[in-house]
Image (cartoon, rainbow, N blue to C red):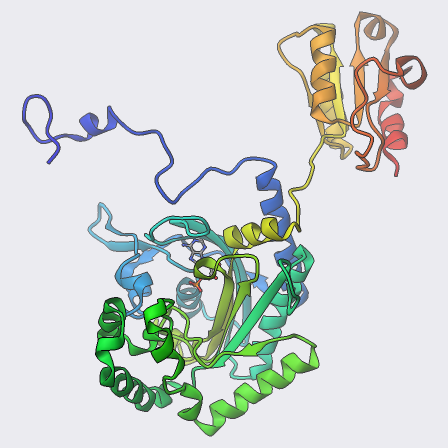
Length: 458
Ligand code: AMP
């Protein structure tokens, strides 16, 4: 136990006196321009989802722990990785390890018109062993539909994810590092599961000593998850295990065929993987996963989802079916980096204001141009003309607006193009002072917005 010098138990102020001031393992800080890239990605997803009739849902980051334990106590996400805690009111709460359960809880609590199509973006928390592509706080975008059994919705959701990835430059079915593999499977209905589970358990029990120790433990808790084992020792047994497809109902089989026909009609390449079971226990019927060719297999899943008929009822709602997916933003961006697509955008301001008068000219100019719709930044602290021009140059701004005592007295401003307009940065920023005679011009102060508009026209 940690004790203080006097030997007494530490009180809060003792602990606060020596904080680490480091982001805790598995969490990290993100800065611009990476945050710009993040925002663009979320925007692309939001646009795709809105075009398909999905509305955004925002749910709390923490919930009563029961919302998440409903996901299945046998899954690692619930049994090992949950960040759970008791608040000062004695409530047992947990940070969300994923968003589907919260979305279903929100639906159960505030019924919506059916079918209810929603999308989300937000952080999820899992106490996993952190490594590249595996964080304790990570972000997801996702979509859910509650209230319809129609397998065409499974197709619509898969297509939504596929079109989103395509806009990033990751292409389902493509060879090489830009390619993603779409794996699909049907887990049948809940009623189909017991017969399969008992066949699976009998099969693995018959060769128990050949299974890895870890999988022997998993077998006792959740035989389905043994199929998920990536350990080489288990590979042979897993490959020859009974497959669920032989145990599922005619209705579930027909629904799965319809999903495949839909994907074929859209030209979406997929592989039926009879061993795809996914991490959470609530899935029924269609399940799917997107794996990035460019990532190592232990962390190559960039997204996945499926049907979860039964989860809404488990969370106190009507017995409505659901289907959805979540895509990991962090991992998707790593896959983009590996594939050399969806580069971090270069974000430069339009205008940099240089002002040496000591007056309020820069304050007014920046505000006026921002209100006119331009991005504007400036120097502060009364720096010299040379220092301010250097900052203007370094900023990548397209135009410097310069006000010295002469301009201020004459009611003018000087305007200097720093680089080619319309985001063309191929020539790089001009050196401060370069071409000053030909490029820089002095204009009347009221003409400023009009001149900037003219100069920034593509
Ligand atoms: P899951 O609900 O586990 O299928 O997660 C959906 C997606 O979220 C996965 O395909 C990953 O891309 C991402 N994901 C899950 N866990 C993590 C994690 N610990 N760190 C980063 N991304 C994760």
